[in-house]
Image (cartoon, rainbow, N blue to C red):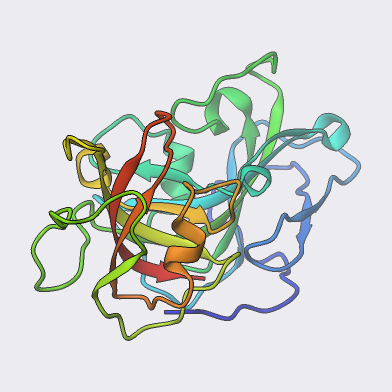
Length: 267
């Protein structure tokens, strides 16, 4: 389902433990890089989680795979540290018992899809799974802004349909093929899509990658520099709830690859 959000978002209530520190001002539309203003004063030492804007989608739950765009800035100088908006691929956080910082749990679980959330705190407590300090002192304050795309069960797929398999006659040069027609929003280049997929090598047709095996759905901006060749044209005009088979002349492995993609959402 395609969701619409307010053009300007304003600071709302704090969901964390209050202390005497000041908070940044975050503005801008959901889904776009946030405009962060660091105020004068000290940030405080206690991590704080603040809901900036409430979305209208399904609430995330323990056990979900949560997809979110993330902007991380250093309090000192408002310098950028990390941004998924720049690489057009949101982070994937799997809440299946794996180690996830408490601050990220508070920021991401129980939130409606489409929400924007602010996290402020020491770097050692505010960086997410597999994120490195990369020269940032552990006690330095970081500002983290989340745009929550949504939470999805790890095995999310088309309701009532079996797991995808690669058609026996699909080749890398074949045109994209609609295996199951969707009835949701139409997918267009530049959209942010949430998918499950299976990838098989050519010509062996051996499955070499699968979102189901890696933990669950992934999100991508549908642009030529972000997704494999063939995806932009192959998914153009498809609808959420559909299943598409796409051949690609290359992949991240540098080999021709066959894909079957379930489109779960588009924004």
